[in-house]
Length: 135
Image 1 (cartoon, helix red, strand yellow):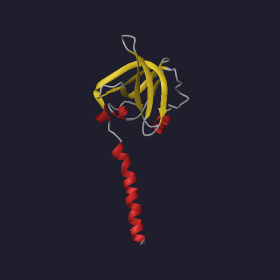
Image 2 (image 1 turned 90 degrees about the horizontal axis):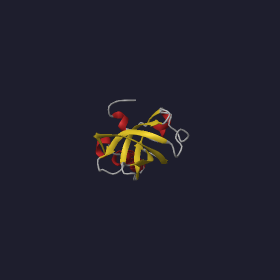
Image 3 (image 1 turned 30 degrees about the vertical axis):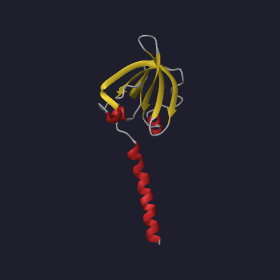
C-alpha cells in the first residue's frame, strides 16, 4: 500500500513539474526576430504577473489613432532583480520601447528595454534579452 501511495505521489509531482513546460512558449513561437521595433508611448497599465509581466502602452499611429500595445517583459522576480519595480514606473510615464513584434500582426510585442524621457534605460529581462545577448 505504501509503495502504491508513493508511486501516485511521485506521478502527481512529475505532472505538476512538467505542466509549466507545456504551457510556456518560446520566443520564436510568438515573436519575430526579423521584426524589431522602436516606439514611444505612455504606460496605461502594468500587470506584474507570472510567468511574464505585461505593460500596456498607448502608442499614437501616424494618422493620430491611439492603439494600446501589450509589451511582454520578464517575470516579476527578474524585473525586480533588474531594478524595475512598481515604484520605478508610474501609470502615465512616457517611454520608448525597443523589442520585437508579434508574428500574428496584433499590437503585441516582447520588450528588450524601455528608455525613459530622462534617458534612463530599463532592461526588461525575458526572452527578448536572450536574442542578441545585450544586457
